[in-house]
Structures are given as C-alpha cells and as structure tokens.
Image (tube, rainbow over all chains, first blue to last red; front, side):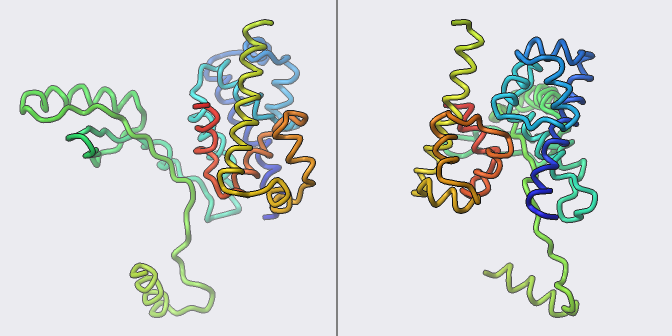
Length: 178
Length: 80
C-alpha cells in the first residue's frame, strides 16, 4: 500500500469513528456541529471522508462529544490501521476491548500491576472496589491506578520467503539473544 | 472575545508550540524535516507560525518523520 493511500484512508477512518460516536449519543450532525462550532454540513463532510479533518477539528469534536481526546485518537488510529488487505496491520478486537489493568504503588518507586485485564476503565474500577475491600482486610496496599494499554504496532515473526523452519527458529533465537 | 474563540486560539497555539518544540528537541531543522516529509521548508514554517492550519494527516506525518509515537505527541499538546 502506497504512503499516499495509507494517509488518505485516514479521512475515511475519521469519518467512521465520528459517525459511531455521534450515533451512540443519538445526536444529529447538526447538534454535534453546534457543540463543535462547525456546521452540520461540515460534520457530514467529515463523516463521509470527503473533507480532510484538521487537528483543531479533532479537538473541537472530542470536546463536543465529551470524549477524552487521547482515547478518541486511539479509536481513530485503530480504525485507520484496520486494513483488511494488510494482514500485519489488522486490528484485533481484543487489542482494544481488554486494555485496562489494575495497579498500585507498593511503596515509593515500586509501582506494580496485576495481570488480569478488563474491557473498560469502568469494569476495572468496579473490580478494584471489590478487591480493595479484601486488600484492606489483609492490610496490603490498595489498588489506586487503572493502566490503559494499546497495541501500537506489530512485527512479523514469520519466516522470510524461502527460509526453512529450522533456520527461522535459529534466527528468532539469535534475535532474542541480541 | 468569546470563550470558544479563546479556547480555539489556545489549542492552535498548543499544536504549533508542541510541533516546533518536538522538532527542535530532536535537533532537526525545518529544512531537514521538510525534506523527510517531501514538503517545502515554507510549509513547515507556515505550520509552526500558524499561517497554515495543521491537518490531521500533517500531524501524523510529522510524528512519523520525527519518529515520535503519535499518541505521545497528542499528549504533549493536551498537557501544554
């Protein structure tokens, strides 16, 4: 995929994310435009992928939706990278659907995370409430943080063309040692 | 001046300042960045001075050219 095509797909991805967030709130394009200081036509233009969104538009729209800009940006990058023809970049639902982990400050400079992952900050927060009741009874440090993760990229470990399985294993072992 | 206008000005300034600071922090000249992007130096100057509005594609291309994670770059704008 050419670089130009790659970036042009961003317009469509932005439109998809915008439509999804607006419809989730049952808003018209006019209503969103009003809050974002854009016209309904400008919103529709951005949703259709016809108009290139500015970064300023992005912040205005995030603010109007009441969405955390960083999380909306993550949504946008995920939609942009979900190209069905590019298997290395295919976005997997579980990369986003279980992004949160609970964590705590064991002592100054010693920040620890639990292994269990949660679908959302809300789910993680509810779990923290229950776990903290147990931790308080045991006299251990309370969970005080929700850490949010996202897969930013991936690198294929598949063998290069023509490489035998044995050589691939040796290459991977060598790469792991370096 | 309306509150919305003040906020828009603040966001615009944050974007410009962060992009320039990120470039300078990596010791990359406007010319060098322009060459990496395939742009004219004027285009980089116009983005940093506000004469050109930063498109979302510009932002992502600059992040890639400077080898900065785009989410981290967005966080810098938000924290400015």
